[in-house]
Length: 85
Image (cartoon, rainbow, N blue to C red; front, side, top):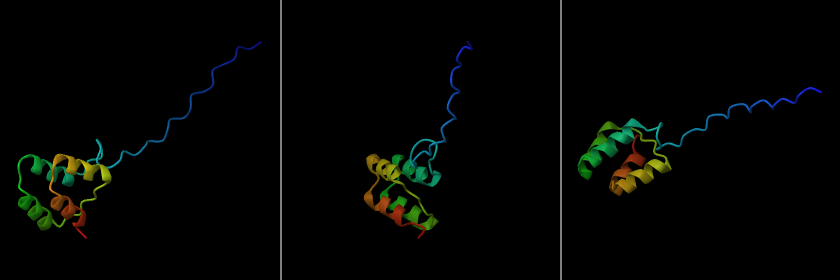
């Protein structure tokens, strides 16, 4: 009687996209604002940067939460959400 063989391994799972704001998918524009804040930039300086660059920050929930947990002023987060529109 033939010896049974093990079933073939399942195909590799499709890559699960990493939510924005987590490692591997950081938006450099978002990180620049966060780094500037952490280095001591004032709310006014951050707001001026956001306004002058006219960049659209595509913030997902994890990024917004990280900004808030870091203590970034709400006015800066709101300006980022409104930016580039």
